[in-house]
View 1 (cartoon, rainbow, N blue to C red):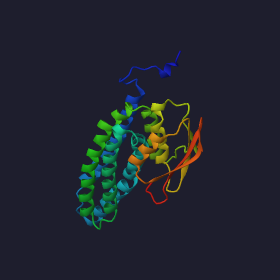
View 2: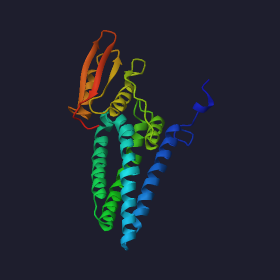
View 3: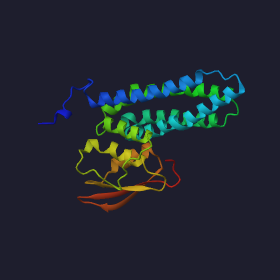
View 4: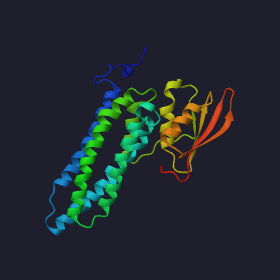
Length: 245
C-alpha cells in the first residue's frame, strides 16, 4: 500500500501539482506587489527621488532578476525540448530577455523620474509574462510526461533562496520510461555553464533527442559519442563555449 503522503485526489488542494502551482502563484504575487508598491511612489523631493531610484534598481536587479533566471533554469528548461511547449518557451524567453534588458536600462537611469517610467514599463511586461507562466506553462508542465512540477517549483525556490541545485556529471536514463526522459535531460543541460558538459547514458542511440536539441538550442550544444552500443550508449552533451548559459 502506498504511504498516506502519496494519496491525493487529482486537481484538488491535496494534489502536489496544484499545491506547487499555488506556491508559485504566491511567489509571483509577491514580486508583482512589491514592484507595484515601488512604482506608486511619486518622487518629488530630490532626496526622496534618489531613494526611490535606488529601491527600484535594487529590487529589479536583485529579486526580480533572480526569479527570471530561476524560472528559465527550471520550468523553461524542462519544457524547452518538447514539441508541444517549445514555441511557448521561446516566447517566454523572448519576453524574459526584454525584461532583462529593461532592468539594465533601469540600473543606468540617471534620475528617479526616468527610473520610475522604466519600472512601470517593466511592471506591465512582467504582469503579462507571469500570467502566461501561470495560465499556460504550468498546466502544460502538469501534462508533460517526465516533468515533475512540484520538484521543479522546489528547485526554483532553492535558487531564489540562493541555494544550488544538484548537477550530476552522469545522467543515466535507462531505467526511466522512454516518454519521460527528455525533460530531465533538458533540465540538466540548462544548468551547464558555457564549456561544461555531462554524460548521458542510454540504452539506444538517442537520435530523436539530438534533433530536439537542435530545434531548442540550435548550434549551441556539443554532442560526442563516448560509447556506441549495442546495449549501452554514452554521449557527452555540452554547452558551446561561446553560447549563452
